[in-house]
Length: 315
Image 1 (spheres, rainbow, N blue to C red):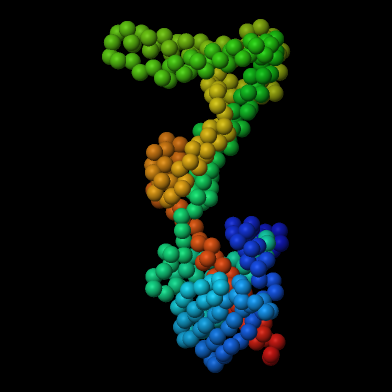
Image 2: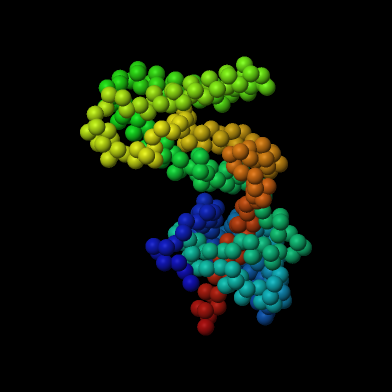
């Protein structure tokens, strides 16, 4: 059953399908041979073999050849035209009118174990998976970015009530970030002096954080107003990173793009960035459907529809 107009999903291969439609709008079906399950069709525009293809069937098999969709052979049922008419497919499933073809299911019907050849490494898929993981990350995702923006809004309001100008506000932030950086980067050896230094860094960090969130000078009414306007207990007295989650995500994605040239390089990058993308990325399939295989599926679908329309018109 086709999806309703309001519920139709977006076609992930919309660009490929649009290209296919643009090149095949004038195509028609020529039946070169039809004797039971032995058939030979040619699908082409009038007067040209460009973007044309042939479909040949015999019991249990369907093969494609031509200017596009060249060199594929499928096997599943005695009548492969009947199989491709409905198996693993929903008519006009996507919002652009494309059929909802189960490419994985169709690829499994390729002869000679060629199903793996139907996919290839995709830079776009690699970056899409990284982006989706970051968006769902507790520390870097959309919720973290919203939290960060709410903190900044609260601090702007707080500092305004305290009467701080931009220079004073900037100084508080810089002191906080410097103290956090010093505490995070210090790695003391096992000496008493180092232990004292480490404690001093922690004390300085807490002090800078307290100064950033200080309510000194606020009246009880102003503080009540501030708490009423913002989720003080959820947002206040916590570190505010210099770099927002959104900026950090953009930086990570930019770095991923520099390592997206090959599947092996992409997997190496993922393994080296487990702290941001997780440790289960070795399971990620970075391969997507090869454009030639996508075209072949659309070619078969069009050929089957044209053949069935012709058969219906002939009674």
